Length: 102
Length: 174
Image 1 (cartoon, each protein chain N blue to C red):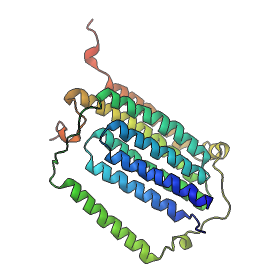
Image 2 (tube, rainbow over the protein chains, first blue to last red):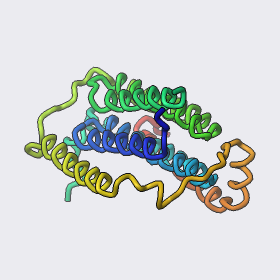
Image 3 (cartoon, each protein chain N blue to C red):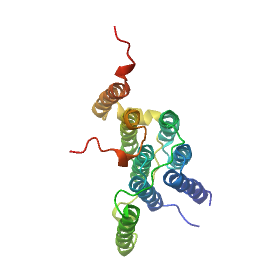
Image 4 (cartoon, chains in turn purple, blue):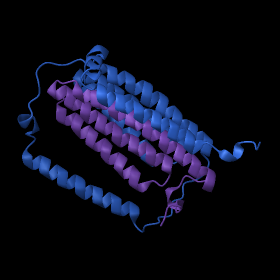
């Protein structure tokens, strides 16, 4: 009988964060990079909820709500930026973005 | 056994969805992988006694945020192949190598410490159900100031999105 302990959830969160990080680094489509940021934020949420269960407090779950709202705001602004970039250069590739170079 | 199954199946789906997100070529497939990850995470949240968070996760993430993503994917077109030429030479190899070294170091430290994490931070015996009334009782008393600040953030983000996406050229001259 194997017991599912807190470590298992934390390991899952670490794996999810690593996958998000790899995706962030190897993909060049700005949209997919955004999805990878979502993966990383979700792994943090999983850590918060695991800690909330582990320590028997509600604060972890409340932090998740704040992360959720920040993620939603970030997605809204980010996608608006992607759309306005796309109007200029008709591509969402980040490698073509040289307009902000000094 | 059921507990193990309730962890292993959603955890496998979470990782599968995450891999689809970073490796699929078609952006629609990527976003569907993200939906899979988010929905499976909601199941894990339920097993962790965070029922209200699981519900909000489904509504906000798998519902609203993914709809937004799909809107933008449809708007900017899905048929353009991603440019695969590396601007920095050996970028993918470099990232993978660095990450493997990092993961190796971390697991070395964890294994060396002998999985004694639970001893330093002992788990509580009772389990706390994350019901809406319990969350609201804490959110609207102790955390009410962050709550108000976050509402300002949402309004600013909405205004910023409108200002960014608004096309001044479409406006008819007087």
